[in-house]
Image 1 (cartoon, rainbow, N blue to C red):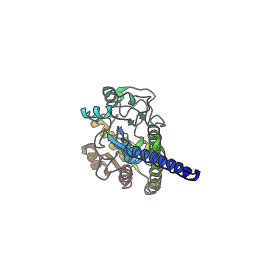
Image 2 (cartoon, rainbow, N blue to C red; image 1 turned 30 degrees about the vertical axis):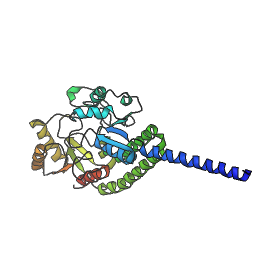
Image 3 (tube, helix red, strand yellow; image 1 turned 135 degrees about the vertical axis):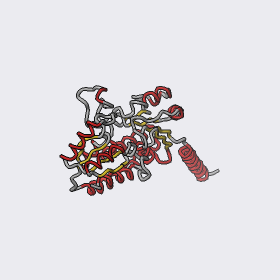
Image 4 (tube, rainbow, N blue to C red; image 1 turned 180 degrees about the vertical axis):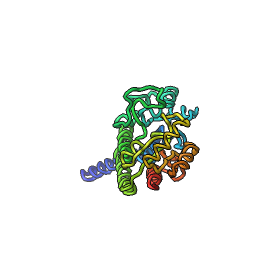
Length: 309
């Protein structure tokens, strides 16, 4: 065999090995099991699905239709958490009534605080409403501040990026795709943010809500909260508080009662009858209402509710 023929065979062999390696890599990449993600609320599940694409399976413990502070504990959740690769929560004590117990019972060491499989998105929030003195007698007060920052689209962009970084750390081979997906969703939120601001621009919106859910939303969009139907978080109003609300709404010319979709209509309708204010039921989480299919459509519905005044 001459040297030319030998060199050709070596080139073919090298090419064949390279092709085989690429084939095996692609097969392995395609057949890698999806990362299993459990989130506390459906907004985070929406973010994780958009960032992870086909490389993730996502379960939200809350559906969006219930009070996020009182999510029912289901035995099936323990098995899901036990096999999960990542647990994502809002933090700031939003999940204190159920998440720690579920994580402890599932005994998944990967998902314990401080581990790579545990992502608390509240750690980097400049929280609103941090109590100076913490006392449970004041109702369902959160010692670390108001946890409803999901209603601020700028915070949503931060959460999307953080999820992208964590997924990239868990599966480096797909890091580029995760970051590209996160960038795309951040851009979509940014584009909608301009239109949401435009819808509320120039409006003097004064409102009350059932629970203090809207602090971050109000700060971002320049609307003004003038009270809550709950005298203290998690406490139902009595006659004296309702009378005080009526006087406050009349003196401050409050024309809008924003009712989170999972609360009763009874008190909002009574206040509306006595003050002439309009009652609007709005979603504050993905899945809370039929139109709140994902984060973008949830925010569309929420902004539309505020824009009615």
